[in-house]
Image 1 (cartoon, one colour):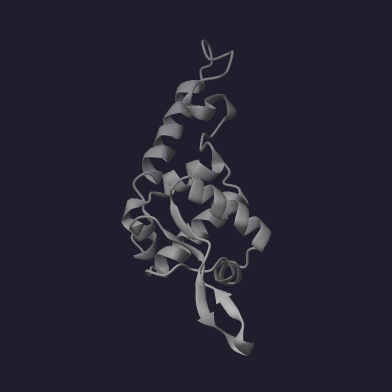
Image 2 (image 1 turned 90 degrees about the horizontal axis):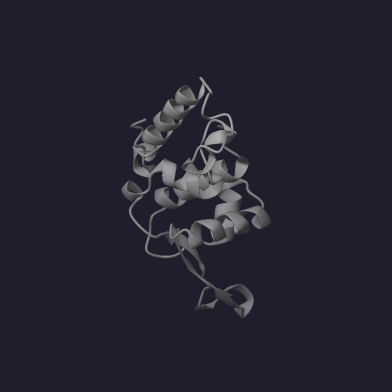
Length: 148
C-alpha cells in the first residue's frame, strides 16, 4: 500500500479544518496557503471530499465592503461532522479507492486468476484486514490529541 499525495493532502486538509473548527467556512485560499498545496490540486481534493459528504461547502455571500470599498465573498469549507466521527480509513478509502497491499485484492475482492492455488493470498488478505482494521480505529480527533 502506497498512499498517494492526494490521500496525504486530503488528510492534511481534514486535519486543518478540524483544528480550525468553527461555524464559519474556511476559505480555500487559506487552506491552500496554510498547507502549501496549489489551488488547482486543492480544488480537486476538496471536491472529492465534498462529494463524499465529508465537507460542507459554501459559495460565499456578500459580506460587506472590504478594502477600497469592494464587496468580498465569504465562502469556503468546513467539516460536515465532528472530528471524532471521521476515521483515517474512511478518508483514505475515499481518495485512494483502495488500501489493499497488492493488486489482486483491490476493491475488496480477490481478482487474481491464481487465487485458487496462491499460497501467499491468505497472508495478503490478513495484512489487508490489519491495515483496514487499524485505520478504521484512528480518527481525526485521535491525531489532533496525539493518541496515536
